[in-house]
Image (cartoon, rainbow, N blue to C red):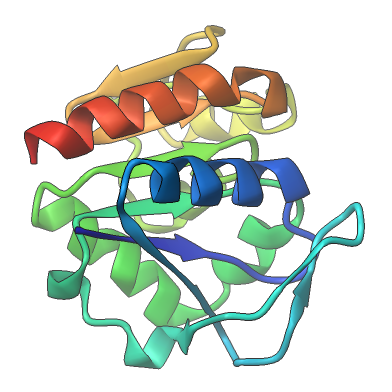
Length: 168
């Protein structure tokens, strides 16, 4: 089973690497996609080399999607293909896990209206304005969408994602 992570520069380091390694511990293959194959650098300086570009992503090859936070989602969401990827995962009912600022991508995919969600407090109003039902909790699961607020929530975030992937 494969899981995809979308990332651009200034991702929140823990929010990319914690799920990446946690999912690998579960025996899943994890790939990172970006707008190019150039090394991406997190806010704290950790680096990741993307495995593929957004253009090369075939959603049917993946069981789930992870969207880490930081400033990366702001950069990912301006790429039309990346937004299409999110929409495709959602339309296929595959798990989509977004943490911190990650739900910005769900806003761009027009996928938050009426959905229970959480996020970093800095984008709470954006989610509410887009129609989300905001909950200030470590993790919120609404159907196939998993959201969390911040790095402290990663154990809950990954736990719920793994639970859903095991049912997939």
